[in-house]
Length: 188
Image (tube, rainbow, N blue to C red; front, side):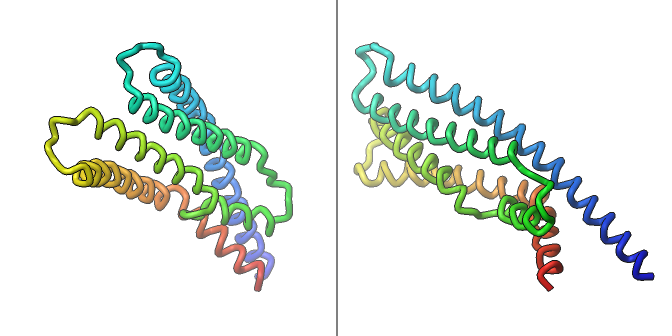
């Protein structure tokens, strides 16, 4: 009877590892694709706002463009770093180590997302500068204009984060829970 339970558990662990490997492969491809998107945006915004010699581009446009370029540079680095992380995963390590790294990798909020927050903040500054400059017809106090721009931007970011959370719940949360549960079983 014990032998049968061990077989069932090993099959479940095998299924879990296979599912995790498929998701890791999918995430590796996603990170590689996002790397190229951010690289293209970096080049585009640098050419449009910084390198472009057009005298009609104002100083504020160039400064906001510099914020975009910096944000996309950080994003490019971040996605390259994440791609390398997924590419260099080692499933031959002891099960405990694999599960520990998996639990950290699939946790919803992780310190590895700090660069993403920096990107979001830099884009927020760039958009605020740009929108403030170009929406002069919007008659309001400067602080009110900034607050309206920020409210719209952070509202969009909140909705994007909520959508990301729902994707995480569907795709990544089962892997995170599975790794966490297996780690707890191994510890006991």
